Length: 398
Image (cartoon, rainbow, N blue to C red; front, side, top):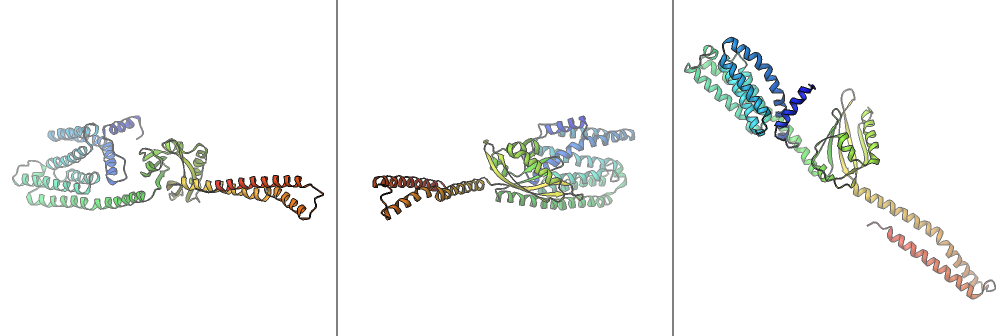
């Protein structure tokens, strides 16, 4: 469904919906699921309403045909109205589905799609509402079944339902309907509970570690980041972002090509299962942080890469400390070279002059000249020692 008309329709529905706050909790995904249900339900219901209305008018069920048209417009109003809150949209939607089920049961009986609509209403209620609110669907089905049971008992229903059922036979059908609805409400939230537990573990891990947890979907080229991206880099929430439109642009220009080529090569290498790379990322204030990015590659049965899941660690302090150690080592090497080479020259002259004095060989040099050479050599040696002291002090790591 990539036609221009479909894209326009999806865009219009998205505009009419309240903004869904990005999150990793089950409520966020229920809201997103409801949005997609609405997107697909309206055109599909149109395909059902058109032949249904024609059949109703041909069969003499004019009231049912008008009700079907009215409910379709109510669903359209829920879909395109931007003034209705998300919670109200949900209640209206599942309420309409329950109402359709009730009307179909009233006019056509249990052999029609009425029971299916009621079970579908329960199913939708569980999907888009928290577990403690899903039970009201079963309660509503009990009320619908009770109202129809009273109508059958007092012979107020003059349709197919009243003609084919008495009170006890209808109660037998209703009990099965209620039990099925109750089982849906009871069992499906257990699945969501496990998903919520997994999400909760993810959130706890994200809070417990300073690392950013990320997942790169290679199919649509999008990355999901944990909330730590705000704290580490100082950007506003961008949980879903294009790899080539945001993340790569934030990587230092000198590292960008290396990162793009490295990850692409690892993804295509069938033997690669993990990825490790160090590079620089721009922060919100324009400065750069050194990060260590490691990830695992998830592949399908044909070893084609599907996703990458990993963690980004801020190693700026470690990198700064390593650079300081390297700078210190360079200064120490300079000091060692100075001690082994530069100091030897004045020291050798001093030792030579001392030997002359020791041997009382004053004919070679007069005393004043010897004292001058001793003073020059001593001053030169003192200057060298002073320079070594300054370099030694500068080589200390704070």
